[in-house]
Image (cartoon, rainbow, N blue to C red; front, side, top):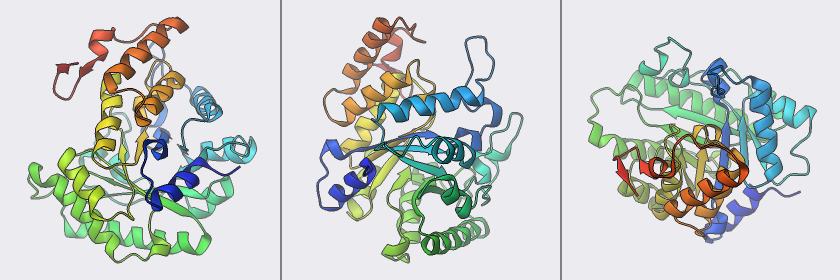
Length: 325
């Protein structure tokens, strides 16, 4: 079965940027960052075990709405290679290729506050062997020559090996986690310039299929998405927040040029990931606006007998500006 990701990227490349071609990914690679608490907590406050996390992945893949399921290599191996759940699915399996130190979130740790250092637990061979031809590669630039050069050297080596072995990738660039001499108001421009600058010397054969970046506001998204039509820009989800936060982030990013959304915690921490993904797709397709999506989501939770974490009024609240909609 041809993957929906391939179909959509082909259409986007041809100039068709209609809502139906908007790409949605479920980022279930949190075990590469948070360890035991990656999948969240149950009603008793206990960490959700990995098997339950995998069950959520199977359910989302079976639904067939997302275009990508991003996983750690260990979960990819079980779900793709051993179980073969992607064989008759339009969903593309993908693995996180590297786990830079700024995503290490072990309880009690302070890694995330220190300047990012490149590191990869997985290998390209292990990703391909486990059943994926697509990987996520991430980098974090902090306006520090020594650290940023180290990140770029590793990225260069990854690209060369990926090209040789036939692995495609998408490129995630986080906002600086420990910037040096960089004013906060300049971070959006710094990130945009860093992306464009580091890809300028990269030939088409080594370029990412699309980008995954933080949403730094309308101006920054419009600037990056409008600079080069051959670069497809996607937005990352960040913290869970309210349902309105998630639906509005997709809506805003799409409005200003993004053609992909890659959400992890926003999907995983929802009361019903299946219904949540359905509402995300409705927003992406321009069938409903963010407010309507929140109301639709709550109505479906009620039908299913699932108690929401927040009442409707609170879930319509934007945690970014504390404004209710």
